[in-house]
Length: 70
Picture (cartoon, helix red, strand yellow):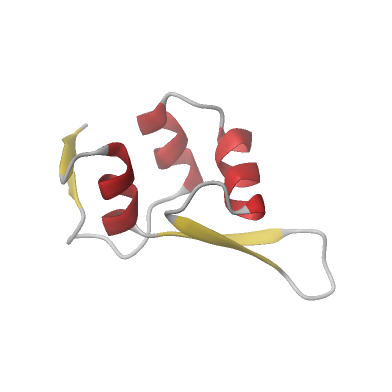
């Protein structure tokens, strides 16, 4: 499958972690504290859980490629 920045509206935390070679928790915490500039983490109202949005365009710019063969 070929993932490009124009095909998807969102990339999962799991996909990003796999591509970066990091643990999913690394990605979650980075999005929560703003140290990873390619997405956002929003705390769900009345909950301790977060919802994540990761922009494919910003993510692939961050890792330095427009697409990735998986």
